[in-house]
Length: 116
Image (tube, rainbow, N blue to C red; front, side, top):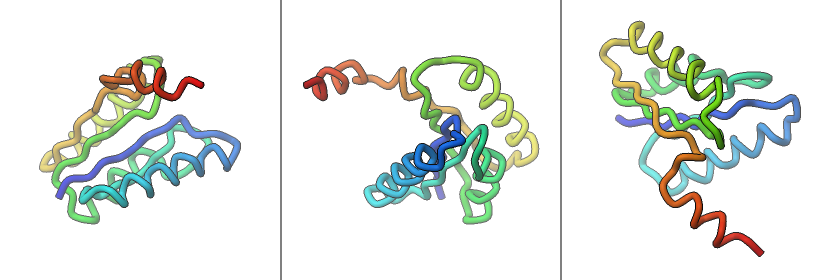
């Protein structure tokens, strides 16, 4: 089974975190993948907890999607470090890091299409 984890920064504002939860729920309605979410700071579950949830549900492949606009410290170091650590702990599970949101192909077009 394949899983997707959407990881965001996390916020002290619960409404901001809820947007990520809602996004994950909406994506899961249109996908056969197991969709999970995670936060780096201020909210739960964290990435390790979400990876564990995926594995407990039977995942053999996990893609981690950083919901970040730019490749800052979290995208460049923190998330890859956690994935590397979890890959060692779970050698039978393929855990891969996707490009962050700001690098998605077509993001420029999406922005322009939504410009009013």
